[in-house]
Length: 281
Ligand code: C2E
Ligand code: MG
Ligand code: MG
Ligand code: MG
Image (cartoon, rainbow, N blue to C red):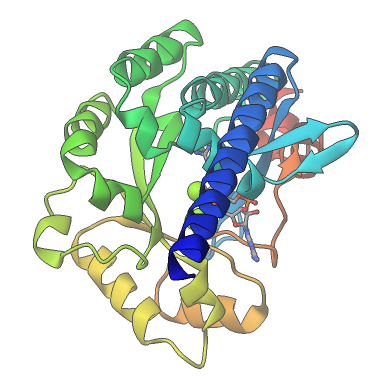
């Protein structure tokens, strides 16, 4: 009967929910262990000045080294966000990035900004802003060398939460980038009031280039009008690069230049060849 099948469906649904909750709990526990056992690692993807070809910054991207495999953030960051464990993981990312900035300064006299991704849950944490300030002090890092990336979607969804903290961070000198720009439907009227320094054009619009360029062109114009730095994400070929250069996009990131790299590879490829090192000898 309909009633019986309805109650079967309910039982099935309940069982599914219980399984999902169990998977989440298990994953949360193993993320906890991963943090404790230092299984997370940052890779660094360089950002280039498209006119000079020089590396002018990089983005720190987390990976999980689990039983000899490297796990993509796409498969654990969403669970980390759902369960709240993104807060200590995110703090680890920020501290680790501060250590790297310090290390590059001391070892190579090399200073480029590192951008870290910060999830909206971290903005709900009262200690985010004081933590960032304290870490910058502890590692003696000029704030402009640390850039906070927040996706447009989470910025828009939690605008009340984020805006005040972003204002504090921006006033303290940290860079603020809106990540995946163009996917979050921000309204133009308040975009200009947001405390941001950089807009990152979502890679989806870069991959449409050069054929389908209306959105990328509009974002570039908008960013230029608002006097923001603009970074094109996900540049994969020369045609995309040529279009971006022709439209005065100053900064780019993507597999065409480099994948995200382990620290030692980033250093040997981009820092040891750097001329400030030569001038130190
Ligand atoms: P995102 O912040 O937008 O980072 C850019 C992603 O695009 C990275 O993927 C990068 O490897 C990839 N990418 C860069 N250039 C290209 C390209 O030319 N083609 C293609 N197809 N992809 C490119 P990844 O490292 O897998 O990270 C995925 C997302 O995971 C990030 O997107 C970010 O939202 C999140 N994520 C990564 N690390 C962290 C973290 O430490 N904290 C938080 N909250 N999220 C993170
Ligand atoms: Mg990012
Ligand atoms: Mg992005
Ligand atoms: Mg993204």
